[in-house]
Image (cartoon, rainbow, N blue to C red; front, side, top):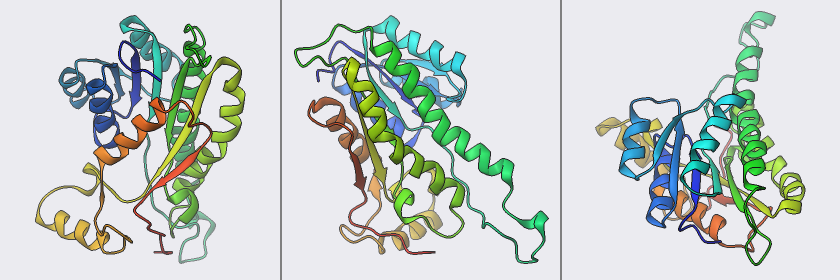
Length: 258
C-alpha cells in the first residue's frame, strides 16, 4: 500500500509510540493528523511532522469524526494507527476482605472504555471514511493498526483491567478484518512488550529501573525503542498481504506474575 500522497491519523500521537509512528508516516510521504488530548505537545508534534493537530478523545464520536475529516481534508485517508490508551494497576480484592476494598468498578469501566471501546470507535469511523476511497489494484482502500500489549496474553498481578482491555483489542482483530474485507480495509494488531516511552520518566533512577527491566527480556536485553514499534506499524500498513494478524513485539519476553 502506497503512503505518499495519502493522509493518516494516529491517536495518542503526542508522545511515545504514537509520536514515533507519526514521524515514520511523515517520512514516507503521508500527511499526519496527530490526535491526542495533550494540547501542548500535540501541536508541537504536528508541526514537527508537517501535519495537523486534532484535540481528540477517542471515546467521543464527534471528536473522532472531526479528526477524520481533518485528515480527509489533507489527502485521502488510507492509514489509521491507534496508540491512545491508559494503564492502571490494582488488585481485584483488598487485604481486609471488605467489599469496599474490591477493585473499583468505575475504574475498570474507564480503562475498558478508553482502551477497548475507544479503539473500536476509531476503527468503525475510520473504516467508514476509508470506504469512500478509490480502490487500488488489489481492491484495497486502507489499513488499520491497533495497539494491544503482551499483557493481553501475559497479564500480571494487578493488571486485570488493563489486560482485559488489551485482550479485547486482540480479540476484535480477526472479526474486524473479516467485517472490513468487503470494502478492502485491512486490520492488524501489535502487542508491544517493554518499550521505552515517557511512562518510565527520566533521570538516573529511571535509567537504572529501565536497565533492571531489560534484564528480564530474552534478547536483546533492553527495552524496545518507540521507533521499532513505528517500523512494524509501517510494515503492517504498507505490506498489502498482512491482514488479521496480532504480532508480539517483545524481544521474546514472557511476563511473570509480578
